[in-house]
Picture 1: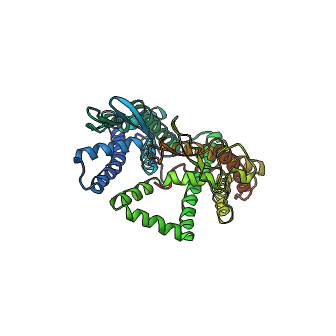
Picture 2 (picture 1 turned 135 degrees about the vertical axis):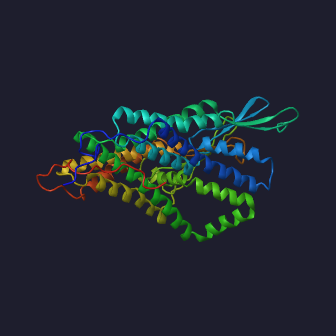
Picture 3 (picture 1 turned 30 degrees about the vertical axis):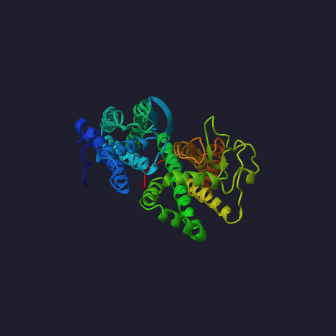
Length: 422
C-alpha cells in the first residue's frame, strides 16, 4: 500500500510549496506580460493601419492605454489644460485574459501551503502584476501639439486614480478567488458554497456563449444585413479591418448586451451631456414591455420585434436550467436540491449585473454633440438576471442526479471553481 506523499490530501500536513515570494511575484509579472502583449498587438495593428502615421513610440503608448482599459480605466482628453471628454472602451477580451491569468496564478501559489502563506503568496502575485501596470499606465501620455488651435495642445492620458484603484481591485479579487478555489474546505458549508458558486459561474459562462452563438445564427439568417455590414467594413479600408478587430475583442461586451435583451431587458444607445437633447434609444429585440414590466427601462423607447427574436429566450432558459442541474447534482432531498439551484441563480444574477455594468462603452464618437454611450438598462438587467437565475436554477435542480439514499451529500471531490475558457 502506497503511503501518501508529505502534504498530500489526507496526510494532515501542509505541503512545502516550491513557490515562494520570488516565484509568486514572477507569476504576477507573467500575467502582466501576457495581457500587455495583447494590448501592444492592438497598438501595432493600429500603427500598420495608419500607414505609419506618427512615430512607433506613440503607438506603444496607445497600447499602454489599451492595457489599462482592460481593467475598466477611462481615458481623458484635455485641450489647453481643460478636460474635453472621457472615453471608456473596456475591450473585455483583454479583461477575460487578465482574469484567467491571475486566477490561475492565485491557484498555483496557494496549492498545498498553509493558509497564511497562501494569502501572502497571493499578495505577491497582485504586486507583481499591478505595480508594472501602475509604472506604465500612470506616466503614459499622448501629446498632440496645436491640435486644439494655436498654442492649444491636446493630451490623452488615463484617469490617474482609476489606474491605481481599478487594476488593484481586479487583481485582488481574481487572485483571492483563485487561491480560495484550491484551498481544502474542512466544513460542509464550505463545500456547499463552492458547489453553488461553481453552478452560478457555469450559468453565466454558458449564457454568454449562447448569446454570442445566437448572434452568429442571426447573422446567417439575416444574410442581407450581414452583407451590407461587411461591404461597409470593406469600404473603410484598413480602418474597417481595425474596427472589425475591435469588435472581436469586444465580443464579451457584446454578449452581455445580447444577454440583457434575451432576458427581456434592454441595451440602450444614447447620448449624455448637457448639450444633447437626444432621447436614448433601446436596441432591445424583446424589451421589458413584452413581459409586462413597464418602467424598469427608465422610459426608454423599445423596439419589440418579436417573431424570430423570441428564440433568444432560449439563451437564459438553457443556461440557468443547466447550471441549476449542475449545482444540485449529488444532493439528497428536493428541498436541498432546489436550495442549491436557486443559490446558483443568485450567483448568476450577481455576475450578470457586475459584468453588464463593466461592459458599458462610452465614446466621444457621436453624430451630434454629446458622447455616445452603450450600456444595458438598470435596474431591469439586474432584476431580470436574478429572476431568470433563481427560477431556472430551481427548475434545473429538479432534474439533478440525486445522492444515494442515506449517503452524505458533502462526501466526495469538491467541484472545481475555475474558468473553462479564456
